[in-house]
Image (tube, one colour):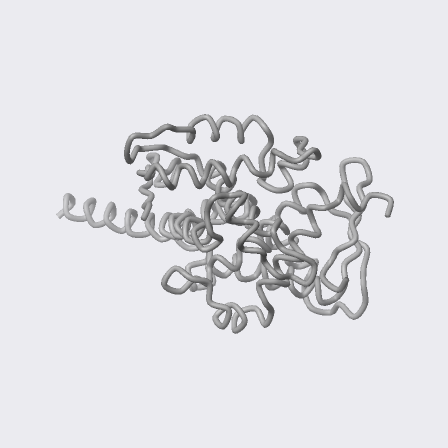
Length: 153
Length: 140
């Protein structure tokens, strides 16, 4: 399971996320991300509607995810890129919903090569990274204050 | 169809015909994601809450709150809304993103989701899909 770590700038804000991806996770992200751009209506506005970014950002991410990867590898994402990846993961399955709301697992599996639960799990990992980033700086600031106090004493 | 939003494009903007139940679902989707980004203490917390929302919804807290307000309670009949591309994306990412927060041991929990939203994932799915099918619905 992928985990993300964070890098902070001097003010304590999160500036980027690094992750160690398994080749299978990179392949899954690639499939999720390339899916919206394959339709005939996939102009920049359509990609922005689905993913929150246009062709340039999407193509750049695709190039970085593209294998072959011999083993786990390290990759770095900006927060806005994580948003695009998260949208790609949660968007794709909704296109396999039939009238009446039923999700067609088989069509999805054939087209994307994975099951919806695998997309969900990776999407949750990104959500957790977002949440942990939110919780972390408080601790950071507290530790910084404690260090300053210790020096003063 | 009850869960399908009728959308037409007007230049750079979109005109959506939104029903009360759809507004309710959108309100719940946005609220679930806002609540999860305030650390549970109602404040804006440790300074990176904005990062959390940027990743989850691609928007600032002010933008998310403003849009959430538009779907707040009090809808008794359908309304026509004028939306920017960014707002439509925000609605779409809330609808598709919210259910993922209700995984238990790696699997989606219909019960936990229903308890939090009083709705169903299939409703979120259908509504999300209808928001991105505008090219096919133009002029229909």
